[in-house]
Length: 331
Image (tube, rainbow, N blue to C red; front, side, top):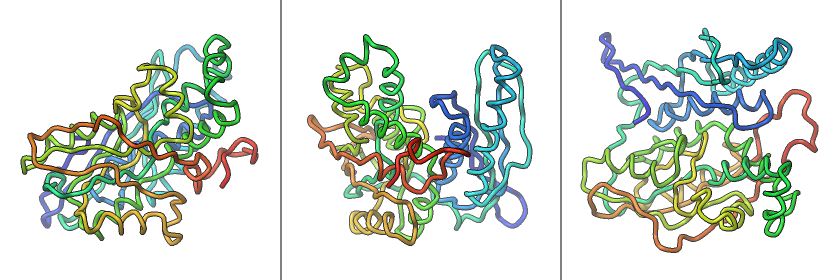
């Protein structure tokens, strides 16, 4: 799993800590900083922890960048990271920086809490329902956006998707990745979630398998619905097995939480999640179920595609400083 749970001697407290880092995947340094921070915090949120006490930022400067590029890009990355930490109700108390061949952005999120403030992630039982809180397809959107400048690739893709579709999906993906999973963490407590895992670093099938392996009961996860950013399922299909989106192997970065909920609570979770009082801007989706099994996960033969509007997925995330309405997907 992605988060450490460490007993803390005084008063029965526990330290909950997560560490993660990623490489740049979008062309906006500020949003890249926001995505990296949201990604680190998602590991705490998957345990139902809603408050982070402090964060450490990890930043690798590329030795291939000129001094001018470093001076322009890195402050924006740092600002994006800090702004998202403040949105989460915490702050970056210190950082660790160094040179490497690549730009690396990540951090450490730490909180001290009582047992009542986190959720043990091994309690899924047959009959539970699987809910996902962000759409899939972010990596497809990022890749095809880059292909706009590669004629031999774009000439194939434009048969199934327009440039406007690609731009919308890209901006929707960027803002989805930068969105915090904090609301989902709070609802996990309210509605008695049995387990959860952030969908990041690998595909939905791998994350479901990782979670299933942690369960105390002999269960398996079955995935039958795939909420996907608009038109990205068609793009993935046109590329054959290049992405593996419908096979559940397409990596996601800073995706939603995959949550196991009691069947009677799942619909309420989805309704509450998209209610105006939380301001998330999009819904959550029931994507599968828990059945008796051998702690594995599988996808049904023909999973149902739920097209998610990129404008909806992109709501309620701050744009980069100086961004215009034409550079962000608006609701």
